[in-house]
Length: 357
Image (cartoon, rainbow, N blue to C red; front, top):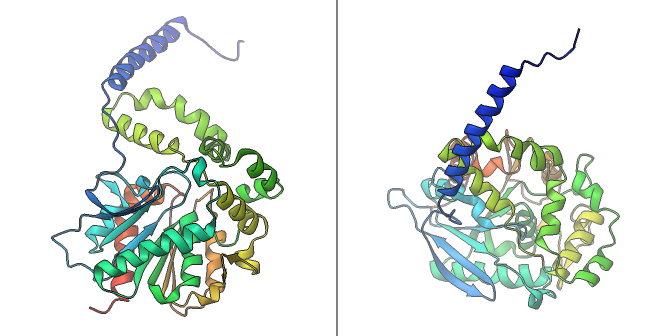
């Protein structure tokens, strides 16, 4: 007996159905509109070099928290992940929670930025954005919300400048880079970063993107595109797919000197945990993070495992430390429907409870 029964009529039917789906899908693809980079209205309030500081249009129907929040995104990929579409926007969720939201867009570094250091980014760009917001609102401190690598940056900034940070929120932020489940850290542990940076200057975004995709190669580079024929049948699903593809492959290059220090000091030597981290003239000690901290991590995060974020609890100097566990992944925490209902309202409530009005 033949183990696999193949009936010609069924084969022809499957081929015909697939061709019809492909024809419809290609028609939908040809008619797809341009995908915007961020959807919530915003205004550029400060520019420096390639950096732009945006303020999002505040909600007029909500009582606004008097202390603005500054979002510090990672240097990797683009910050419009936080504002991907109308019903998938962390930014809009924060506005709806009564927060006054600012965001740093780092832009696209080029060869002129090769020698920018972490000191330039943190004690230069971030500090001047914080001062701009403090000046605009006549306040001493701002709320800081750091995302992924931007969360690590925000931790370092808060440790160096606690007098300027009212509350600190970290999202999917690596703190302990040597936890057992951190595949990315295992890969980069023995890479000769000096030779890489000395040879390439800036690190191409495509190289980093290739690295991230290979953390889940079958899912992110195979199955996703096999499923695409079904996605193409629905215009709304197609738009969602294209938005995510645009963001994934919108990968800025990394300033060489900053990349060198970040990989060596954080991924290879784990100095945020072990001590000995210096940024410019400052020694970074998380014990100086004395303001209230809300640490949000994703339970299925393959880039920043939960243990890598939760390590923060034992390092910060504050007694007001809160964790929020999200049942999803590194990207889902910004774009899933569950995240929209859970995360921004929780941030707004947590900040309100710590704000004098």
